[in-house]
Amino acid sequence: MLIYNAEIHTMSGKGVIPKGWLTVEDGKIALIGEGTPDLIPEDSIDAGGGMLLPGFIDAHTHLGIIEDSLDFEGDDCNESTDPFTPQMRAIDGINPFDRCFEEARMRGITAAASSPGSANPCGGEICAIKTNGRRIDDMLIRTCGIKFALGENPKNVYNGKDETPITRMAVTAAIREGLYKARRYVHDMDSYYSDSENYDPPEYDIKCEALMELLDRKQKAFFHCHRADDICTAMRIAKEFSLDAVIIHGTDGHKIADIIASEELPVICGPVICDRCKPEMRGLELKNAAVLHENGVKIAICTDHTVIPIQYLPLSAQAAVKGGLSFDEALRAITIAPAEILGIDEQTGSLEPEKDADLQLYRKGENPLDLMSEPALVMISGEICRREV
View 1 (cartoon, rainbow, N blue to C red):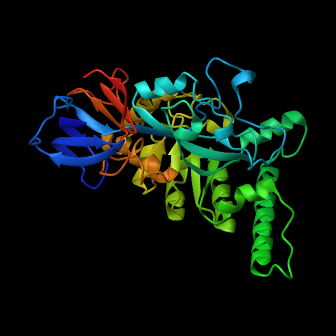
View 2: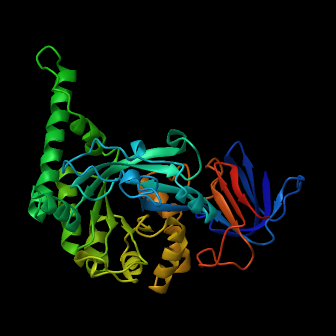
View 3: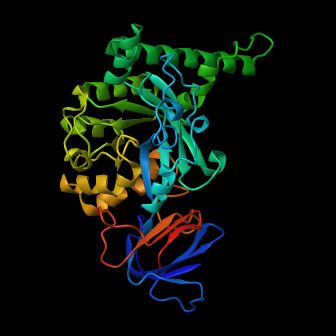
């Protein structure tokens, strides 16, 4: 399929092509060119000068693992019977028939990270998924990391149970204990594999197994934290165990943006368009993403769906523009930046040959971040999910 006469925002090193064309073959972007193509087949799409850009990516959600319009029956986000559950996998709790997937697609959101919740100091494995499909295994892009939580959420959950942890010290100690056990488990496994005659393998431990790739930096450590001191605790743990870390929320990030930048930690900012619903969010400011970016921090913007419905991801980026972020950086924060943070940028997040054909088209003159805007065309892995052109 050919899409032509488009203002192409590639989100790659090629920048913006004022008038260009793009072809899709076998679910992938095949070619991108400038001007008008020599041959225009009958089934081609005339973009009419509209904006063609990658599908949006929400870097932190609970999409499908907290279902729409359901309470306990559809909430599989937190296994809050044990504070440390790295063996839980979001992919095992997601219902791809939840109607919010359709709402995401219709607003041009073609991929999202769906995560366990923040009830536990360690909640489980995050997965990056496409928003189109009927079987989650077919929608999976990759498992991208382990979710940890610091601060108020685990404190509240376990205080209500009158169990540990109920302090920030205990929350951090639970994480540290689990990581130390996993590191020793890896050492014992290595000893066994290098000299099986003199060493026995350690007794199987599903929690330690789940953390092996994290300790080997093949997966990232995603830390839920709002307050500045919790962000610094995440840095401390990341250094101690040489983790490839990401900050989720980072509400107080603007207070220590230079420190975060010095540690080279990316921040997934959000939710942005919400109230200050708990004490640790009292530092919420629209300027957060802009201040972090100005200090050299890589940022993405998220909805934390279902906190903010996923279809308002573009509006969240628009709110960050109101807070001082440039329009171009806001687009990056919901396309290529989240793809890079999640480790899926070789597959999606920008319009480049050989990447998945995850794209959307807006009519000429439309702002894709505006509340009233909707894409005229949405394509996920080459499959047309919405077409009004």
